[in-house]
Image (cartoon, rainbow, N blue to C red):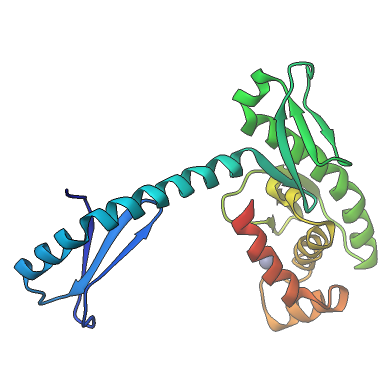
Length: 219
Ligand SMILES: [Zn+2]
C-alpha cells in the first residue's frame, strides 16, 4: 500500500507528522530526518492515511456541492431546487428557496450573478440616496461588477463601483460599504481623518469590517 504526499521539511521541526487537508496528504519532518526511518514510518501509517484521505476527500466534495447548491442574498441562505415548471428563476424569501429550470441550473453562476445585480441595484438605489444626503456629499455614477477581492471603489471623479457579491450580505453591512465609499468623496485615502468621518456616520465600522471578512469566506 502506498500513497502520494508532499514532503515539507523544516529545520525548526523535531518530530514527524502527517496532516490531511482536502484530500491532500502533507508530511512534515525535521530537515535532517533519516530517509530510511521516514520511509518505514510512512509505510507503517499507510492504511490509516489512505482511509483518512478518502474520508477527507469525501467531505471536501460534499462541501463543494453544498456550496454550489446554495447561496446567500441579503444575509439569508437560499437553497437551490431544480423545478422544470419554472421558466425563469423564482425566488421565494419565505421558504428560502430558489427554483430554477434544468437549463438555468447548468449556467447557475450567470443566473446568480443576475439575481445579485438586480437585488443590489435596488438596495443601492435607496441607500446611496439616503447616505449621500445625510453625509452631504454627491457622486457621479454607480456601477455594479464582479470583483475578486474588493467590495467597492470610488475614483476622484466620484464614480462608484460595487461588487455584485455585496448582494449576499445583510443590508447593515452594505450600508457600511456605502458609507465607506462615500467618505472617499472627502478623503481619497484611509487616513485618520477618513476613519473619523466614517465613524461619524457608521460608529460600528470596526465590527462591520470583521463581519464582512467572515462573509467573504462564505460567498
Ligand atoms: Zn477605502
